[in-house]
Image (cartoon, rainbow, N blue to C red):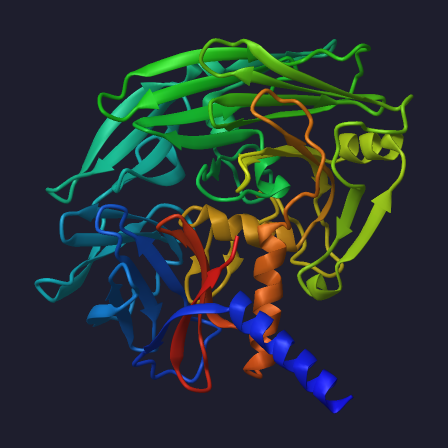
Length: 503
């Protein structure tokens, strides 16, 4: 019996070690005894395959350069980051020169830290930029170039300010009036402008822009947002799902800032309803569009280039079964404080699924899995309003535009993957998972385990194994060289560990 028990413990230990594939354990000159007001971030250099780490310390900023095999090849110490800046927003890479950008809470002051591992220099600078009759929308790093994106209230123009080699911002103005539309009722007519669709305020949250990273997993809480940004080749592709009957798209070419305007009609339900949820998602050359009422859901998959409909899926409340789903209808209920005790229910009837998706915010997830099978998730989530979380969750499940991960306010702007993970952890969602081949024929089989659940399980395993009762400090989750990693600083031995997430 003792031999069996020993063999079982040994097997479980081996499985834990295998799941926790530690690729690096770095000695870090971290002097502070506190972590709650500190942050760590990474930059993946696609050209050199190197990884840059930034770690906030009490009186300094620690910078490390790791080669493709995670060997630490250079380190720098810079000044403590300016306290008035609260949010990391992006980066740029120009040869050996890296810049990491940040902003203050009012979105009116910007700065950056510039460093060069070869020359051994590091310095901080304010960004010489002032908003003129415009409002900050987003920061974008595209092909290693940094842009500040703003929207003009009166003209309907969107400005892309490019950070160049001269350390100045070059303005590119693009007309976005194509996405304007009117809401007409018996009482009044309301004109919606690009400014209203793209910008938000702390109280009304009239609009927002959500980045979708096509190279990383997403969560329904992110893809359910109405205005999305995809980065495809040299294009910045903006999709607007504010209207019931169509998806409006503006694609901006960053080589010359020309644009294309496209409209895709949404699928029509058999019966019209006063209230229905609707949305779209782009992935791998296909635009997925869904419309849901309490009685019916239709999803279409359309070729993005020629607008040919490749597949139409239909769910009705008159049919209790959904023949193209793989597994049960799942409802998950979790909060920030109780995500380890996530409550999972299996719903039996399609009518319940339709009601819950229609009452929430509809989202779609689509990607090609490791078996070259299209994995599509259809569902929705309900925003929390207090009682165990942060309170209101206005930004795709991210509290008040971000979440306090350290000294700076971490937002999905810098790392959409970690933003998706955190929003997934703290909301109530209902969904089905479906598998299809290249021709959208349904494929039987089990759905791969959600990568966000894998990450959470690894977190808990590490905390238990290393007796980290208060969780992982300076935690970061990111993609690097087509793999996903979890990194953290062990407060006991001051080692910075990087764990590969098996996916």
